[in-house]
Image (cartoon, one colour):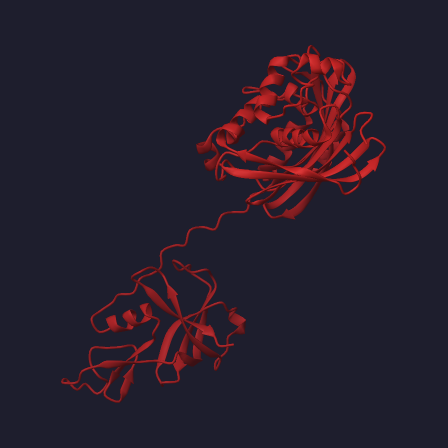
Length: 132
Length: 302
């Protein structure tokens, strides 16, 4: 893979089903009711249950390492949280390389749903030796 | 003590005491996590692949750093946790709602099964008050540090907005409803259809409508004309008190001389009392209340 500043990552599409939202909330040990109980989420002013932040970080890691390869080292994931991602919405991740210093890359990533930008952020990764 | 002073005091206390995670880093939680997230990277789950990889063995996903120390279903914060302290200060000041805005994690190394992870929190920064789309609030930045033993393995800058939710608009109070008689029904029907109707007795227009013509002729029958809706303020009053159901105070009631020659009274909408004067040109407006009732009103002709 030839990686230069401006290289685009292949997009990743995630269906935010209730099962996905609830199973990721529990797998990240986040038991806040708004991530698994629709009645509670609605009572707090939300449209439905919504994706939690720890999952956002996990999805960004998955998105980047699926492109960079299993041995790329993820150094940091810095995300800005935008509109919520409610159940039944679809998240589309896009990203591109914004800086390269040897094997160290900086990537700009974004995930949008029907309401707008859910995640915006930057990820630092180190490519394994031998990758160009 | 101001919020800034309280925040400075909490920040000065530095890092709180470490709180250990419930379980050491373990494969079962990694397996649940990669399954839910859909992360198929074999360095987390395939021992043979992981052994041949740069890691020389299985590792935990770095994005799980925070997972190891999540408090869980019945968790509570440590007594000296600065997040609890600053939340209490802001709750007390009326900033009762919270939304996370930034999560910035840095991984110093990957963790492996068996490692015991603990967490500390320190308050880094409190800035505000800021006007935001959600309401006025304060940005609270904390730094969370994850340790394996005494080694810092990951950290996170976590920023939340602690805000005072904007008050919901109170539901509109019911309006005072007019008494509608057989003689005035045409007027209210007209308003529902967007017409300002004036009672006519032969050549004579009359408002308010009545059961008999001005000259008292007993055999006369009324009909109506539709006013153009144009007129000028003949007189007015700015009503400041007492409250009137369905009205926001102050409001202006204007007696308007219509170009047809009769005078009619109604609220003058969307105007400050000091903008109104005798002779001000206005036009008819129709305020729909529900299927049954539309009220007459005026608006400034611009």
